[in-house]
Length: 239
Image (tube, rainbow, N blue to C red):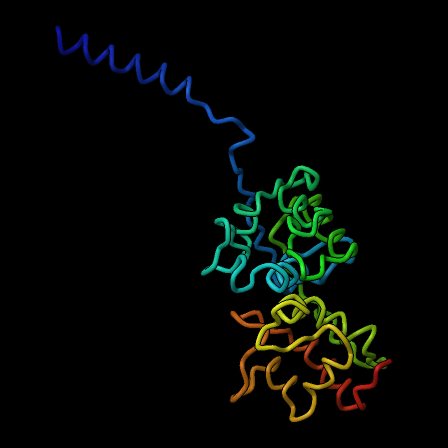
């Protein structure tokens, strides 16, 4: 009888204890389900795709050595992949204004802003892209920009084609402050210096003898590489 009484008493205590230990919803990170949309799906201009637009921007600007890569993980923040960006970046799907990630990239104080000074802040267009992605649910979407073929029939220009590719995929690591390998890619002149000797094509096409860029399996897709090759073949003009 004594054992039965103790067992009942223990169960009651457990029930009361569990009911009183509920986490504050504000402290709980609710992971957004991973959307495994096939990469064969055409890109919708009204949708922000994580793999195509958000991940390259965050990796290039934030997941750098000494900051938020998997090794450095400054302040416990890792921004190298979908799960970690959502969790450690404290992103609240559907609510960009209450997401810590947006708060720090919009910070007016250069010392507290991310990327930190003297690195340049993200542009208004880039911040708006990230806000839109979070507003749309911060989903792990991806699409195939070449599903209808890679259009290289028009004239490939530096301003409209090449510079946006470099800005999205490379500029974060190769900006003014502590540029990777001492290489800056913020202006036409700086980018143009890598054309001599085939270095630019060698690194982005992951050719033997060149260091693969972007690193960590984030190679540019074939269409983007083709556009840069055509631009160079046509004289690499600053147009």
